[in-house]
Amino acid sequence: MIYLDNSRKDMFPGMVRFYEDYPIKGIRFVDITPLFMSKLSMEIVVNSVADYFRDKVTMVVGIEARGFILGTAIANQLGVGFVPMRKKGKLPGDVYTASFKKEYGEDVLEMKKDALVEGTHVLVVDDILATGGTFKAAAKILDWAKVKPYYYCFINLNIIPENYSLNGELYVDYLIDMKDRE
Image 1 (cartoon, one colour):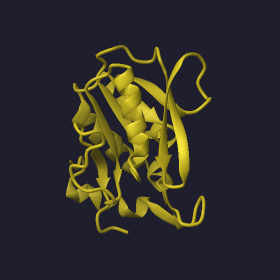
Image 2 (cartoon, helix red, strand yellow):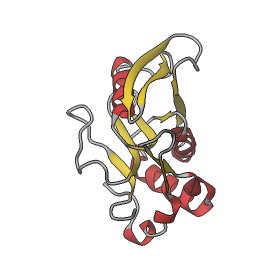
Image 3 (cartoon, helix red, strand yellow):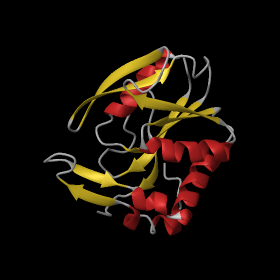
């Protein structure tokens, strides 16, 4: 599902840069900082997502770190709270912990156990989907927290097929379709 109409999508290809062999050899790093630096592009993305999810969610979860940038802005526009899902060891107190594989190693996500109450309707926001590992870890944590339904959104770089399912029942949505734009 594309939240941005075609007339507005054309401005976004210049908002994404690619860096070969970063952070390690063989990895193609996707830099979306130009998107954050543009007031207009941030406004379009945040308002488009907020308009789509208005009255569907009661909380936004942002995945460290770039998911914090988009997630807090979207939560603010929706008038709902924000919960950070952080890397290992950055949250005090009792946490849910899920490990995952990414393109160049393994990592761990954590969320405070008291951050969400059962039945909360959550939008999970991250920046780019590469392997799906981060979202699968987030889904485990949200399942443990007994949160349903939950939705995912991110920027699609056309590296996943349409209707890709992360856990067999939930389908991902994306903010910007970068198909044929590299």
